[in-house]
Image (tube, rainbow, N blue to C red; front, side):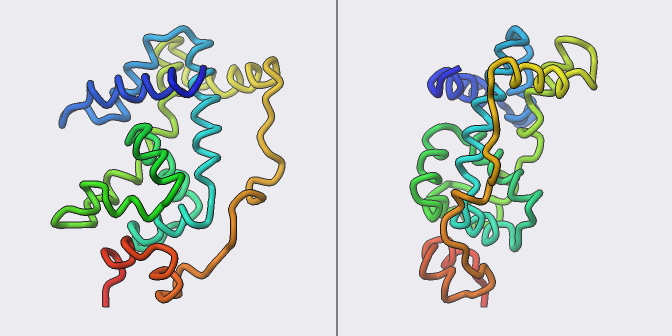
Length: 189
């Protein structure tokens, strides 16, 4: 699955989402309509896009929005960025401070962005779709691992290698320098 196909599936889910059907559930619905191999290909692309956001500057943005951010929460944040669609993904990848322009962050209550960007369920959309197709809750990860092996897909040995320069998220001056728009919205005196 290429990037265009991946983002089309995200767009389809976003278009189907309603207040009663959040995007993560709409995504499961969309993926459950695909053949199993396409669900795996979606997951392959998701993992690559998710891993590309594994950077200190993106984590700092999550830290500001969430009022702190553990490694598990950072995983959820990256999934939430992906669920916001290609435009927001590419903006965040290019400049994490661009999240300050997102309607949830720029609105009356900037902490609304936490509910938008920290979206744990998106991490498991492919697994839930596979379960819906097969009826077997435990089958996705072994089947996906087999798919990865058959495709010769490997994850990077050191996920921290491409994270960029580490810096202190609790240093307000550093956060203001690196993420000025987000710092202005989220650093409270």
